[in-house]
Image (cartoon, rainbow, N blue to C red; front, side, top):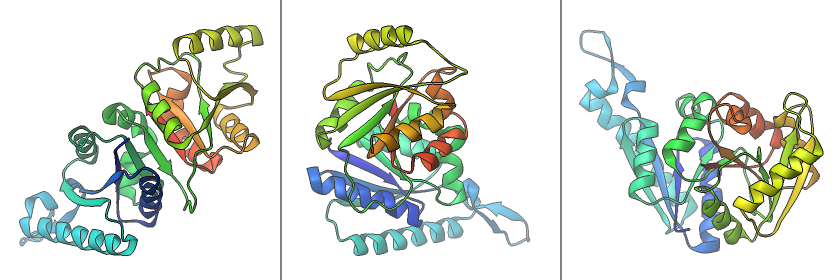
Length: 278
């Protein structure tokens, strides 16, 4: 891993994400890109005739927004005092700019702070989460609270055992190698999607034959819902982070990543959530 992208809305939660990125960079000397995207279509001002127009139609207001963002980013850089951070302000659609940066800069990991301002929250969470995973094509780590000592000794990886991890497996191994993690592979068995022990063991064997892992455990965990099962199991093994895979529509965890329940996992798990694109 060489580069981390931290999208920022200049909020406290974005600062939590940057703090984690800095801790990771100190461990492996990674470069950090701190990116603020101004979606001009979301900002409005008043024209001379008194009508409301968006910022894209007012060059002066557009420059004002950019100057404000650059000033705040400079203040943040002064506070963290790290020479591994490159701050940048871009204008346009948030997802398009993030995807462009990931591609052009060969980003290995995106770290976002949960529950920032409403514009970022609308785009980075909820119904757009699965779209983001596919668009960015790299792991996305969500930080909810301040993490003073970030580590990944123990990683819960929730799976339906029907995932195709051909694309994500190198990413998973890179994270595991960077932190020396033990992966706790878990299948959450729920009443609405119940399989017996023999069937799950067969699914597990097929999954691991295709996607071999090192330093891992496997658990079948019974609970009423996937979200609570992930949260409870993560508590039981005292996991540092929870990892999920974004995949095709109608698959078990795709439901989580394509609806409001992605926020439920972030809230209930009470730990960072790492999503892999597949």
